[in-house]
Image 1 (spheres, helix red, strand yellow):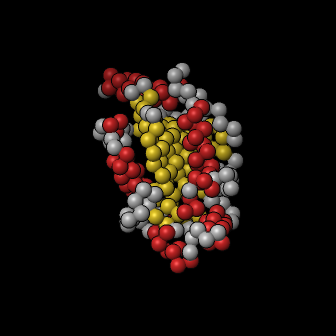
Image 2 (spheres, rainbow, N blue to C red):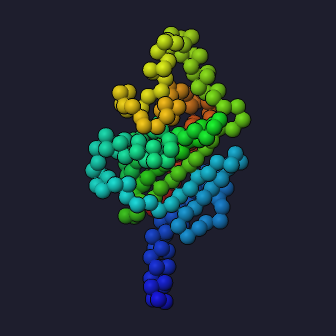
Image 3 (spheres, rainbow, N blue to C red):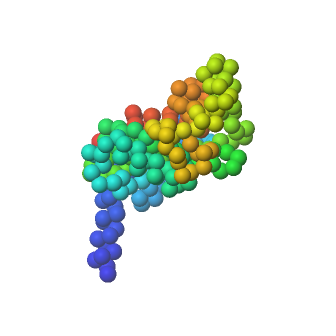
Length: 213
């Protein structure tokens, strides 16, 4: 069995090499002691960022249609007890954001899946509401109604919808559908909101992380 243990350790080490090579300089985030197959960072708020080896999202992922990617992302969110906010293709992978409800607060998860040196890497950032909750939703609702962009009688129908198919009836609770206030256009108005933070963190990683070293 010694030869097998040696082979297994070498295989894990080889598969984990892309993770160990990644250099991340993200202000406000501090790295924990790295594990063999995962790296974890935490920030002052207690939110978590991780990098791990991932299996290919699904066969022929690179050639998948956008609708297939959205369907897969929707099922991923639902499988984790959440609802999809957005999913889009990147040059070498995909970005996904979904939310879960941990009463009384929402927790937002964002993922970047990239293929690097024939290995799929998964960045995951998780950030939750703390203190006063629901202020983004309340302010956006009030503004939309006062501006005539949302009528009170339309609220139930329009406020929460699937991001890509308004006719889609999610199997998750309506509270997990994408709210109008979840739109990226409101992130600048609420820069410290966890959803804004998730988007900004993913954008920074996608733009700045170098996998070539």
